[in-house]
Image (cartoon, rainbow, N blue to C red):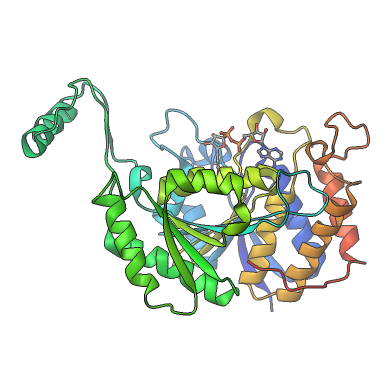
Length: 369
Ligand code: NAD
């Protein structure tokens, strides 16, 4: 069977790492009809918008996409092209596995956790009012009247919507993921002691959903305490489910636990659409230097292969990535003990090594996520 996949190279280091991932997928032998579409800076040049309808329609048609990171250009009316893409396609769940690899320098060993981030609500919804604007002043007056709380007249205001419906959907997604992937525990993260209505609703809804899944352990924790626990004992965590903003911040924190952004893959899921992308951004200062680590994008492609039910290819590719990281020879400079190591390889040479390693690698265990 030939799969159809929308391929978006992205901006900055995007094309380098997206092509690395595509070359690896092609080397597995899985048949894919790639439909290349633009978003970000390339799209502005061609369509005068960073997120053209043809790109969105291609993803809607193919239902699967893999994209390089996209720079959010200043002054286009988009707070973030990525946030807009997730909203337009209703990609409500963001899945970001974080695990340690042998051979990679990281503060911890044996970390294997998964972040499930709500993608559509929260302070990330982009409902904001600028300081000094007439509508902001009106809101401040209204809020002061109805809450009897003082708000400085020169304040800017951001709105934090958290709904029972979207929370139920994301927590259910986390539990279903845990069930399907042999995970043992789901931890819901919030700050309900202070934000009693928004985070309180998230916490109550999570507890209610958890009661339907007796075979998976459940706990809820405060976000600040969780940050401390994560940097002390990340091995205590399994699946974490979070509102949008905490999910964004803890994704980077967890990437740091396992060796950095170059190793953190991800995917965004709607009801019947999936978009695979690394956690990292377009790192413009490294653009075109053939220096950055392609692992995060290649592991995002592994997740895509699993989603397409190409399990053997996914395992083979993941095993090859693990082997190259473990052997530590054909890796980019950031993965070397000494970042000035003259034996470090470029992005494309590391990709070649992974493709070569796929021919000989032993596939030993069914890897998660
Ligand atoms: P970034 O993730 O692009 O870069 C931060 C730093 O992380 C880099 O300077 C680099 O040191 C390191 N890094 C990132 N990817 C790496 C890799 N593959 N290998 C080695 N090191 C790597 O974050 P930023 O600088 O805050 O954002 C740059 C642009 O990317 C912004 O326009 C932002 O909006 C965008 N962005 C896009 C996405 C996305 O497309 N999903 C995500 C985050 C940020």
